[in-house]
Image (tube, rainbow, N blue to C red; front, side, top):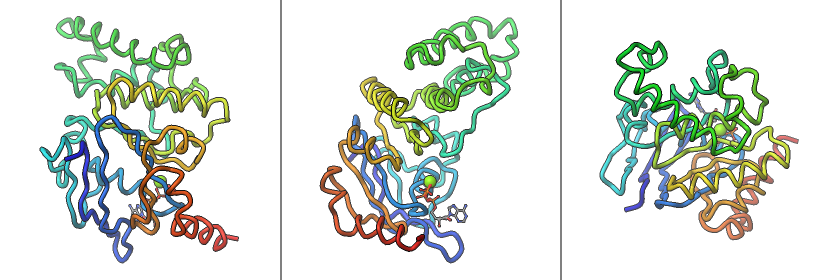
Length: 260
Ligand SMILES: Nc1ncnc2c1ncn2[C@@H]1O[C@H](COP(=O)(O)OP(=O)(O)OP(=O)(O)O)[C@@H](O)[C@H]1O
Ligand SMILES: [Mg+2]
């Protein structure tokens, strides 16, 4: 079995079926793109995988079939090795850049986050270790974040805040990282840099499932793409195949024509 595999995954919100009978597979080491028009169910899939929502039906198997995720609480899913970023930023703006990473890390440290932040005598060594590890992770983005480690997160530029969200997710030491529109709001230069960063994260051994509207990003970095429309998988394969798929063209064009 693959690292992550869903089977018959379905989510209803009242009368609305947001995800319908979805079979999704992510192999270890892949970067898989999850695409689809607005409201097609992409973020809901992330919320189901991470335990924020409970599936109405179906299964979500992680770790090559060893773990069933349906019914698990979010922190348990994180502990099993799945981390995510959100479509809307959720940093602790008044904490420093470094502290935001330490918060992400607390599920892997013995002392709780309160002890680490308050720095009681017993936790000092652990805090030093955690800080060294946080600095190493911040260094993944070159000199974008590390020189700003002591500043409050709200002082960062938009692109740096998005980078920090990725670092915070990585601090939980995931095997699978779910990125929800990481390039949204970035300029072309920032987007190019982000693509290299995502590939670098994958090269460190982290498998990536990526929701992205920027097809330039999907084309370059995703080995495989899954397209959703109205919660249903309408195409799957290499980007060049998927983007020429009539159902995919129809989903995007139809939706845009509907809006006009
Ligand atoms: N908590 C919720 N309660 C009710 N309906 C919801 C909830 N979350 C999502 N939905 C609905 O489910 C459908 C899928 O939403 P979702 O956010 O997963 O789409 P998406 O593909 O991520 O869209 P976008 O590209 O705009 O982010 C939408 O119709 C949305 O309104
Ligand atoms: Mg979304």
